[in-house]
Length: 389
Image 1 (cartoon, rainbow, N blue to C red):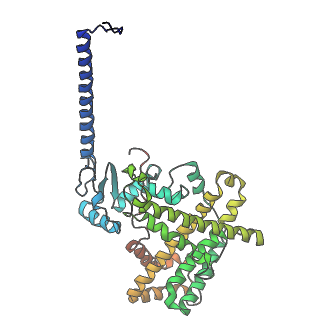
Image 2 (image 1 turned 30 degrees about the vertical axis):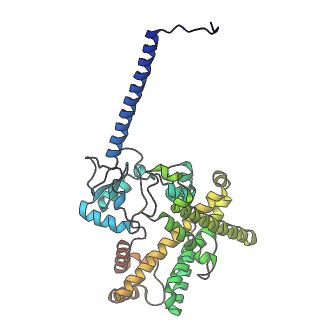
Image 3 (image 1 turned 90 degrees about the vertical axis):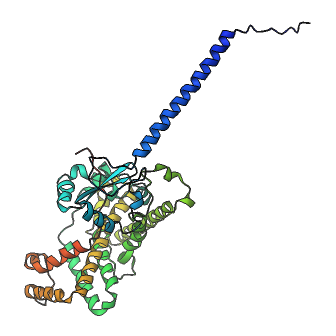
């Protein structure tokens, strides 16, 4: 009995041909997968290896390079050890990236100073991007905003009198309560920087303009401590880990909010002062009066730019002064010799001025030795070449 359904004409040759084609496609797919796997494996094995044309450095591991040898803290001490072992220029492999470390003073001068045009770029730094939101020119590349912020902001000669006045107050404070020398120095440098930048003085260490920069810098330094963060820029997948697995991200975000709130408050107090008593001879007032400039930069960018100026003027100076106090307290014989030179040149009725600079060679040597022995930024800021050199 016929079912009424059409029976297809099966061609054995067509059937075997289709099976052969499918098998060929599978073999091709397997072959391509093997080739891709071998390629990826070879790349991974080469990742982290030091090329023969690179300067010497510590031995590496596949994929990791020298990541496992980077300490969480005290990276400058490790660099010192490697510099003494491998010479003035050595290299490190951070996964697929290469880091060239200049340990030799002449190499730094020949490359970073003489060829600063091509050696002043900044390498990618995801953590710094979170901490600054791109508003800090310390981490900017050669962009229009960077060039605008690099333009000099000139104040008149009266600024020197402000410094002299604050130093005189510092000397009085040191004589009155020498045990509080740490806070006296910190207040002085922060106050000088805030007067120049915001037009506001910090009368005491507990006042906002007497310590604002240190409150902002505390979390900033913690978030950007060399070695404190995973190599996010070399292993981008780390960016996408959840927050509970990324304490570094939470720390960086907390640092940004602390800095942002600090400089917002500084700007608000400065604006209120300007509304109350008018403009002063300070960078903030000059910038805000420049209509062309304010059109190029947002309020947030201006706030953080001014904040960076305070950071650079206050934190570095206080660190250097405290280093000198430390040195001279441990070596009173050098302090007595420096005091004798100072009394000979300036007497006992005035503080030294810039015109006395060449007449105080021993004190100059002491200051330079302090900066060499305990630099504020022992590692400096990472650079990247803009083009092959």
